[in-house]
Length: 274
Image 1 (cartoon, helix red, strand yellow):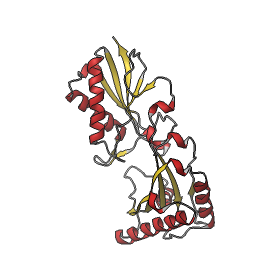
Image 2: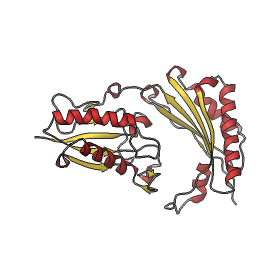
Image 3: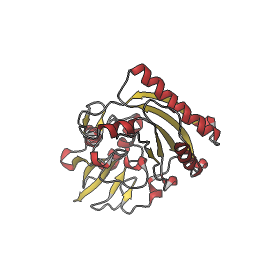
Image 4: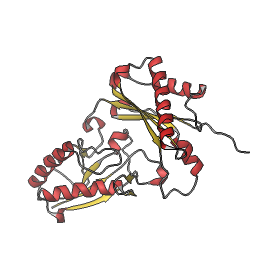
């Protein structure tokens, strides 16, 4: 006997001061946008744990599964987002920090997903509450061997985390700020000509079993690879010799466990100091 299952996921809130983004997802029953008591309680628990002094903005995105017509799904997903917004406002969240309330419509199932389609659909019937935190520098992470610039006495294994090398979700295109960050790095690499390094691409926020995220331009699971490649090509244009560089995508296999912002990253890892 098939039963309707109400799926709830409350992402663990830890190290909020070190994160730039946190996502809380609420899952809905098919063709519904009302909140059950258990959903309301989980949302209230989420709100109570927030340190509002660290929050910059909140975004609310509603989604549907892949069934039904587009127009209907856009309306339903927007109703879901509006319902969650109302509950946030009723429980002390200030309207001025909620900058986006948007129904995204349906989420298509990836072509390579052949199993557990009902479960995938149930997870696509949701609202994501995205909490954007005030930025924190990588130095505050206090991870040994991780730097925001090449240290004065670099050694093999040192990792350079590029703080401003930010990508849009699902994208491997460089923003203006990302290019400025790479320009800064290129100047350092010209100074430290004895360094060889690997460009490592990483992603976050995908199920562990998928390993790699989809690049929305190529429609293939190669996002971390493409992010590493685009940095490699940019540095080559800045006259960094190819024989000094390698590149590799690591997908979601090497999380820093300091929050999603720090896992959507490209790192430079020194492999050799001549």
